[in-house]
Image (cartoon, rainbow, N blue to C red; front, side):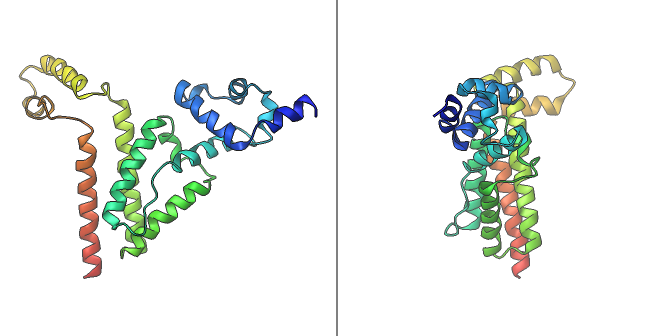
Length: 221
């Protein structure tokens, strides 16, 4: 067997995709190229094209792999609980792979994990009595909230409650008395010992699920 054949035999699509994900996680998506990926894998760049057609196809498979990490709603779980579990699972997966959120809805070649996931979400909603239109609305508003929250969360200049309080104190010192409502929110909400920005995710998610539950009740009336 030639060296080229040995090299190709050592690779498969799963290894290529998972290595690309690990590279994007550690170095950022901007650093991901076919040449860099081949270097990490210890192969020639041309070997990669036996497993993925090009970088766009690689990105499709990377996104599909991340989607496969998100919990699929179970048909045995009440729809509210299923959507909440899915939302938390999605948030966790997207924070593990911070590069993935902007790519999720930009791909034109959804893979099997993505399609199966979307099918399961819609099936759970439809089985609960959602109309086709209401299921579409629910899917849209839930994903807009999840993805939007994750983008905001990742852009914030703090990660822990302690860091949030330190920044809030600094901002409050700059504002003086000119912004009483902002000062009020900082002092009575952000600077309390119980404050954790991550809790806002649950609050907003509950608002959305409650609103959808109300629409579903109206539909069934």
